[in-house]
Image 1 (cartoon, one colour):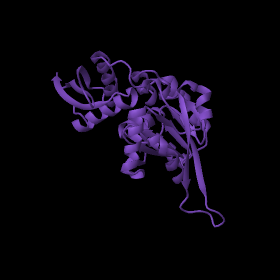
Image 2 (tube, one colour):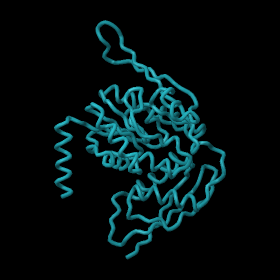
Image 3 (cartoon, one colour):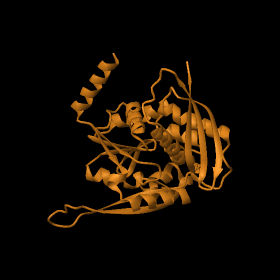
Image 4 (spheres, helix red, strand yellow):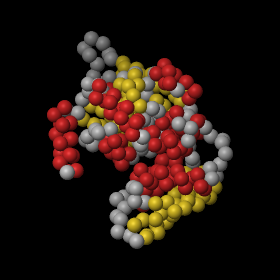
Length: 290
């Protein structure tokens, strides 16, 4: 039955001519900043970014993960964990006429999960931030994120101020020169983006307890692989951030569908993105159980 449903959905989206693209990169590398340039280049109509459905300069539906005041609710919002949130965006998608949509996420698994929850086909083309930004640009974006706690939402500030005035920090305008200008004039495109400072991104607050980190890691891993259970997270503070030791309980017959390196990176990225927690290292210990 599930196979038939997948085939039906695939045929349905093919008939409608809908194509899904994905932009993937580590937290703070400038994905939201550059999403409009990707959309312009590939004539993409809609963008899904951190819980919002965006068309041009308008927010069509959803809610921003950057408005959440703690890491768990931010993670849930970004991956459309709430059924009402899913329904709102699915309904908005049904009202729109579009052929291409771009989903932004920190991992392939994340964008695939978002597509599934919004009843969209799986991405057929995936861009990595390293393909569209230089090493220097990525390093600059990460420095701004982790020293100043600034995030970008790819719509004008008037759209954000309407619903989330308390997180708006500044605005910026990005200019993009078309490499194929018309024969009559050079075409220069500009986009306004909003710089925000979410509550969960403000530094200098109290340190995070082991119990809180255990809960955060448990939720991240539930999104990653629901068979993985967090038994305990041990924390050691270092000058460069938290050094985590994560003890996992894994069913004896269960095969983890990724490498430990990818799992370590996923945990670090999730905590850094949604909790602004500086993660120096993640050590994973696996305990099998019948």
